[in-house]
Length: 101
Image (cartoon, rainbow, N blue to C red; front, side):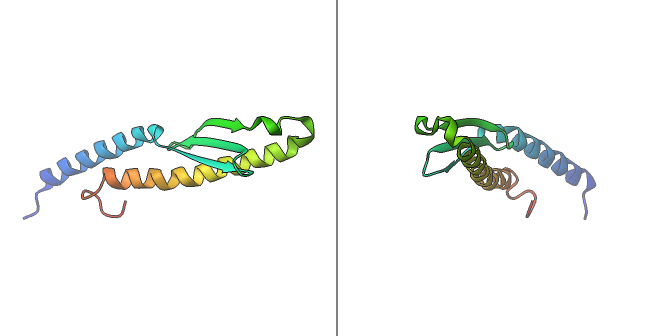
């Protein structure tokens, strides 16, 4: 027989697990690089840029446009990588509770 109270309890448990997993996304990081590693970006699971590292060899006014392009490319690669890791973390947090979240 269908137990509504049990189901409501399970829903609350799932909500708590999802909330905790979302809060943990800030601790998941991924990096991306462009220009053979001359520009590196690190982002977290909340899709916030954590750091940018630009090699000193690029630091002159003539390369400004290239630096901007490489920075965008590195950030985009890091965003793609962290998306995969964030999805995996959410899947693990809800594994066995909610199928195919």
